[in-house]
Image (cartoon, rainbow, N blue to C red; front, side):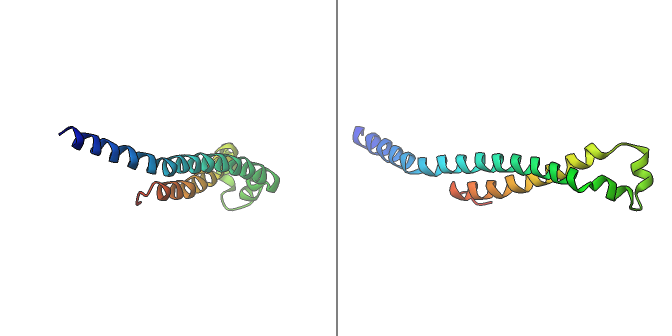
Length: 103
């Protein structure tokens, strides 16, 4: 009986140690995705400011809506959050594949 428990514990420890590189690799990929998403978010805000997207939208048919409220911050926040989420989801998919989890 004692040898059966030792064998099971040994197999469990071996499988845990074999999975550890996948676990660490997945965590690193998800953290890297968060970092790249954060950088992309900052770049998109600066690019939106340089391209004056709010001025372009004020010249569109929604000019009355833009003049009623200052929604520039909301627009830039929306653009940067979309970029961040797309990058993070791409890296999350790869991280989950590294963990051998199916989406």
